[in-house]
Figure 1 (tube, rainbow, N blue to C red):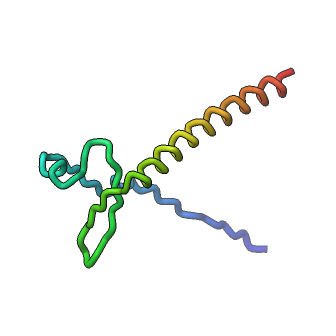
Figure 2: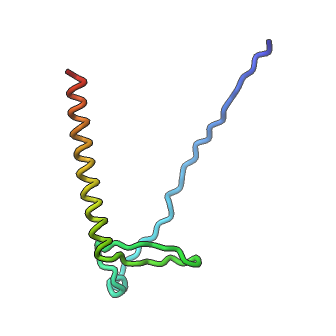
Figure 3: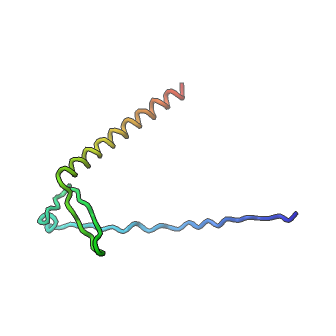
Length: 88
């Protein structure tokens, strides 16, 4: 029988950082974009449109962040309990 060698070529490429935009200036405050406020970015006909989130949206996002932090704490506690249980 003939011997068959199979090779897989793996190429690792350095990925470039994703595109980013950093905005700052007094004009943002004048346009109702206060520090810490959240907003939604939409693309409309090739233009970026920044829409300030409503107070309700901000409250919901803040609540979600708090719940995610609590969930992370619970998961970490459970991992600790499981590690103790397995080691006993």
